[in-house]
Length: 394
Image (tube, rainbow, N blue to C red; front, side, top):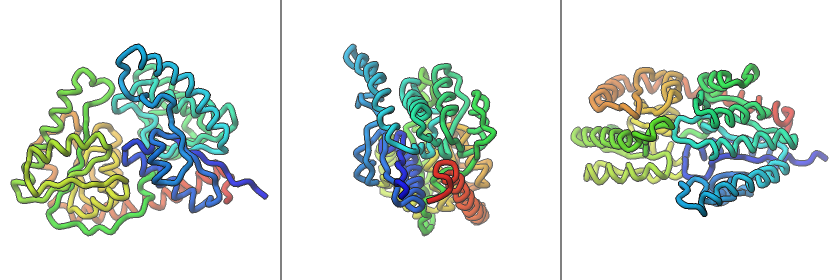
C-alpha cells in the first residue's frame, strides 16, 4: 500500500498578513480535496494561529522568537547570530521529514518593502538548500518576485529559486525578474494569484458605500532615510480622501491587510470623527472578501486588498507600492486606475474615483469575465502542481 504523502507548507504564515494566509488557505483547499490522506505540517512565522485555525502540526520558523525585532543590545545581537546557526539544523530536520514542501504564493522572491537579507531570504534559502540536500521537492507556487539590487539579498533569492524543484509565478514581471537575476525560467509557468481560487462571496454591496484599504506604508528598501515622511504623506492623503467622501455623505468602510495597518485605521477614525466611517474586523482573507462584497466600490493599497476587491467584482482604484499592483489592475481591465503610494495625490485620486464610479457597470462586467478566466487558469496550475510533485495521481 502506498504511504500517504508528507507535505509541508512554509512561509511567513499566521503572522498577521491576510494575503499570505489566504494563499495558504488556497493551497490547503487543493491538498485536502486532491490528497485527503496527506500528512500536513507547517514551518511558519505564526505557528499558534496556523495550528488553531487550520489544524496543522506547526513549528516556529525561527528559533529566536525576536527574529524580526531590531537588535538593541549585545544580548539580542548574540541571540540573532546564534539563531541563524540553530535554524540551519531546525530547518534541515523539518525538511527531511517531508516528501514535498510548498511555499504558497506571497512575495517571497521580492524586496519591494523593507527587507534584510538575513531575515526571510535566508530562511527561504535554507529551505531550498536542505530540500535539494535531502531530496525533498520544494515548490514555489504562484510567488511574486522583483529584480533586487542589494547584493546579499539578490544572491539568497537567486539561489532559493535555483534550488527549488518547482517554480511558478503570479505574473510575467516576476518570472522576468528571476530570469534577470540568473535563474533559468524556461520551464516555469505564470498563473493568477492563488487567492483567485478561493470561494467568492455573493456581491451584495450597499449603494454608495466605499471601501478604503489602508496600509502602514513607509516606502521600500531604498527609502529608509525618508520613511517617516513617506508614511506621513500617504496617511495624510488617505485622511483627506476619506474626509472628502464623508463630506459627500458617503459611508466609508476601512480595511487592513496586516495587523500593523490598524494604526492607520485608528488615526483616520480619530481624525474624521464621523459615524459614517467604520472599520472592518476581518481577520482572514475570506472575511475580508465578505466585507468587501458589502461595499459599492474600493480604493486600496495592499496587494491582496486590491485582489479581494477585484475578485468580488468591485470597481477599484489601486494605490500601489510596486509594479505588481499595476500589473494586476491591467490584467483585470482597470488600467489607468492606479497611483503610487509614495507619491499619491489627492486631486488625482478624486478624479480617478469619480471616473471609476461613472464606469462602474462596464467595469463590473469586465471583472466578472476576468475572474472566470482566472479560476480556470488556477485549475491548470493545480493540475501542473500535481504532475510535478505527486506524479499526477492521488
